Length: 550
Length: 45
Image (cartoon, rainbow over all chains, first blue to last red):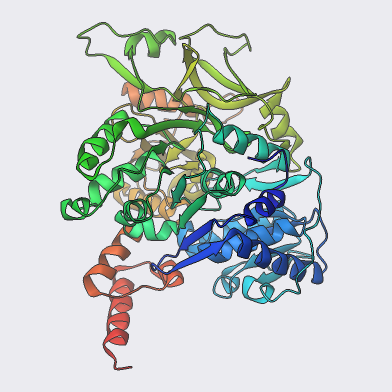
């Protein structure tokens, strides 16, 4: 990897090689874009953006479902000195109202000067009344005119405004500079990261509007100048075997995915399809973005061993958008720590379990802090905790974001005394990070983060439901999928079956999330503060204890 | 939803356009979409 540079510097360096990106679309169409061609096309898109009056530093939203077009647009925006703001396209947002609402929120919150989209998606955007926002199609930008050289921007200039994933009525914009991205990409590629090699070939189906796909797989490939295959997430979700076929066909060496992707392969890939695969080239099979379940990975390794897959290829990873992406990698297979469940739950200490104990929690090690970065675990008072004591995970280093876009309050909560408060819980053992949970209320499913207030507001006005008598929470399970529960206070005259069905439908439609349980209770059941706010954690505790209605 | 689309595409040998998926909300709409795509596929070029 070259010295510190911007995203465009990295593309210019890669353009002198014979390597590039193969984009595979949702319908299987495949397009090879050499880095040299990509640079030329980026300069045309950049020129077209300048010709429309956009100036360096302007934020440009990007909602393009086609992989190849997204990549062209992204690097074009960057080459113009503009700041890309990736958005989730409609097919992955769940339904059109959800897409229109979420994209509108980000367009407004980012104060974007333009949104680059496709001719198909443009009519689906709700941009009414957003002053100064230009809607541009990628098709209209590809003709240029090209600029001769990319627009120079300093390393400390914003490179990316990454909105945190979620349901979500109010995702926050994470501001990352070129220096942040270079620091993280360098650490990822380095010997204590993935130890990238010139012969590596990345394969990814991860969404490009998400940090793991965009930074982890696309930008890292450009920074390290390796070939990479970028597949549509829609294709993977329709046919999980397409991911494994791409690794097999193109001799992929590095590919990351959340735990659910490995589960989906176990469920959907048929034995006859496994027989046709050769996964022996896959040296780094990353897992992250949601809780890692050792049972899933063990089952995957066993099932796909006959295709040449090695369990030692697994790389458990931990990261978050506020840290550009990666915080730590656990290399050379899954490192499990079997700890005493009672000690962990009641005393927040990860004590290795005694042989034969049945009350065991198995956690996966995510490795050590990346070079130039630091990790520590603190208690509620901010005191550093010794090894094997559970506390809040804090991170420090050059990958940490500048802050949340135009949100000083949220920034002050996340960044304190130079440390990023991740909101996640974990412990260190021999310096290795074990992640145990997350911020008390956040619900994570299939890599998506759901904020309970958003889900509650979706069902709070159902007929018969008491105003503000709704609580949604997640229950994290060690050995089975997390459970999402809604508790509703409803009048006795209301048919509970009808309320349950309506609540499920509202949450499904607004957030694309399935509620596992809907509990209808009499008014007055949900505990509240003296000012009338619901106590979510206490409601969850009472539900788990079976005392909610007592 | 996308799992279902994949199964339908494989079974009926059709390709569901990307943005059509976002309009589908009911089983009846799924049936109508598949019928329409199968008919288009069978129509001589």
